[in-house]
Image (cartoon, rainbow, N blue to C red):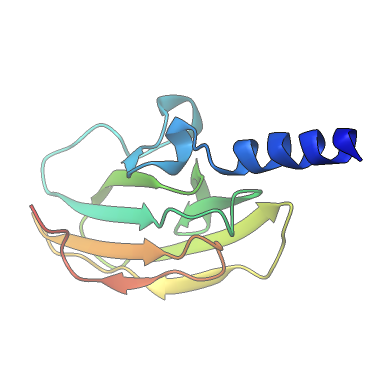
Length: 134
């Protein structure tokens, strides 16, 4: 019985801690961004934030621009893409411990314009979002 009590205490202590990944929003590591990082004249900006939370910790989100994979995001990460202005399609497809169909949204942007998008922690959707608060 004493061993069971000790095991429960150890498990509860593990649940009470958080690692850096689950605290605050941070930039996507450069090793998981494959394109649209170097600004060019006439570009626009797409900001994407995947919410933080434990619910989607095992799911990654592949990010697409015009049907090309450009990055991979985890929970609590933000991504800034410098894309040519004009009609753009932004997509997200979860993979890892979860899977679902790809979701696409209109991401058309004018020269110098910025559009913001959000992905819930579960990685199940992508949608236009309000500008982040400074």
